[in-house]
Amino acid sequence: MTYYGAKELARNFRTVRGNTLRIAEEIPEDKYDFRPTPESRSAKEILAHLVATSQRNYHGHAVRQVTTFVGVDFAAMMRELTEKSQQLVKLSKAELVDLLRVDGEQWGEFLDRVTEEQLSVVVPFSPPAVPAAKSRFEMLLSVKEHEMHHRAQLMVYQRLLGLVPHLTRERQARMAPPAAGSGSRP
Image (tube, helix red, strand yellow):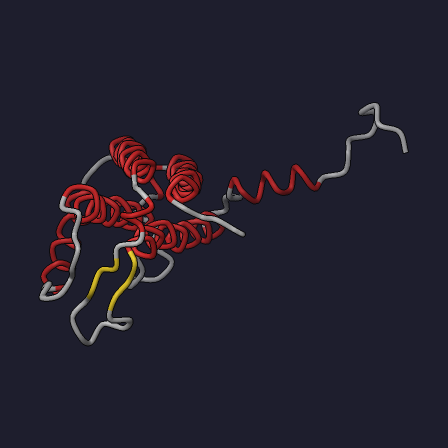
């Protein structure tokens, strides 16, 4: 039987956030406003969005322990999220990277404490939401999936800026043939 629970989710979220942090550190601050098209988010806006959304999820799941989204005004929630992201965009690169780190640690620590019972809670939504309900596990997993989506965007941004993403560099190093004279024999 395959098992993926809170501990695995916490570990994997930390890996994802660690990779996001590495990208945030490697993009030069003078390139944080880069956007591939006028209607795209800038690199800095994506990073601010990631912090704002994970903070929103932390508040909903760790602080409020929401059990229903029936009757929630999602349009208002999205406006608040956009406003929070716009505030975070005003931070310096160092401040934003630090906030990503602190926020990631807080979310990972929360995930470490989630019980099997909490993961199995089914949270209903108002129509026209499809599906009409989700398990808390699915909702917590979506935070990691959301970050992976935006991290992929940032990796494309790195390429467009002439940078090679660290995951690519690491894979290339693993796949490189041993250097001549490295002591290995055929």
